[in-house]
Amino acid sequence: MNKSSLLVLLFCFSATFAAVPVAMNCPDGWKWFIRSRGGWCMKVFVETLVQEKAEENCVAQGATIAGVQNANESAWMRSEFESQYKTPAYMWVGGKRIKPCLNSGLTAACSRVTSFYWTDKSTVGVQGFTWKEGEPNNYGGGGQWCLQLMSNTGLMDDVNCAAVTYGYVCGKVASFK
Image (cartoon, rainbow, N blue to C red; front, side):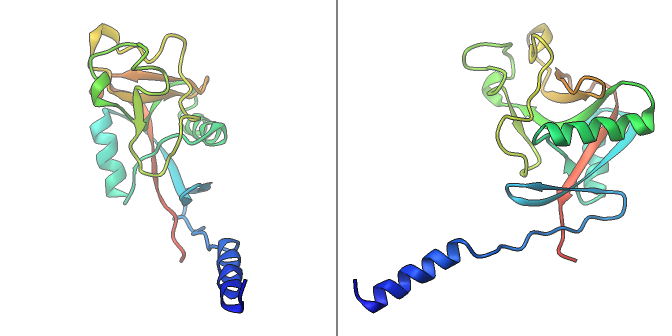
């Protein structure tokens, strides 16, 4: 191996292990989480509304309805919700049923881990999908295209997006300032 090849190899090796800065700043009242795509800020809001209105409210905050990355995030969402609402209830989280499964219940092709996708462009994988028994069932043969999280159990249910629920979780990318 010649010197120039060795230098290129050393540069590539050091660049691979170089520290990459992670945005860690969230607005006041928002909680910071680390995700594979970087820093992520979330806030729970308690309000009775449909999913579309929850999304509009998140957008007004420069955010979107947040997905659930893992058990740690789920526990925080649930605790934060119940500290405000004081009783167990459902809240909107950021997931939608995939098009091939819009009119399907549980099947081989539309399973507990393949029926939905995360809408916030930050949540990855399927670890956050924690379903109630028999869910997602798309009850009635269709129309249950949105996700809600039960605050006392941490389990999800697929529901009609026009259903009214008692809160929602907004999420947005953390900043460097």
